[in-house]
Length: 205
Image (cartoon, rainbow, N blue to C red):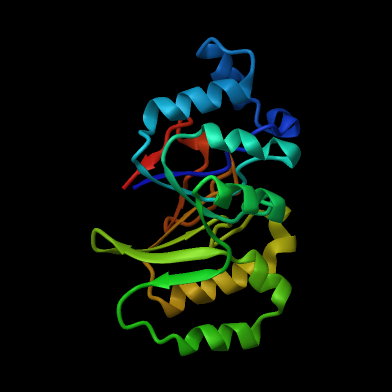
């Protein structure tokens, strides 16, 4: 499985917040970041690769650029993945995780009913995630980091609380996340899959 996060295709403002994007594109001989990113990722993703995208594929009306990406893609919904985008991704064969998906043995599904009772619908709708055992580690994949100390993300505090509860209920070892771009949260259990901290390469498990 290969993992990417926060492609943000067509998002001009992210180029201001994360100048490393333009720098990398220019080093590789591109003036257009989206063209660079699609070609760069496709150099490292085969058409039959299993790819997990941890959210924020594209911005506004640029979501159709996603069809140019290689791989059999599963998307965990991020905060910029709007419903029209999601319907398009499904139409080109992507699988989209829009809620809490737990794929571990002997999991008591009554915990999900408890979480749906405890948290409001708005928080639940933002908390798409996948829990899965891989190579002897129990991993929680999510867009938002589970242990987030970034003051910018205070508005997502309820989402963080819910993710922490899922992490603890499932006895997870690791959280692989997106959302924070070049900012890395101060917790060794969190692995940042954002392009900016991985030389715009997929993480491979």
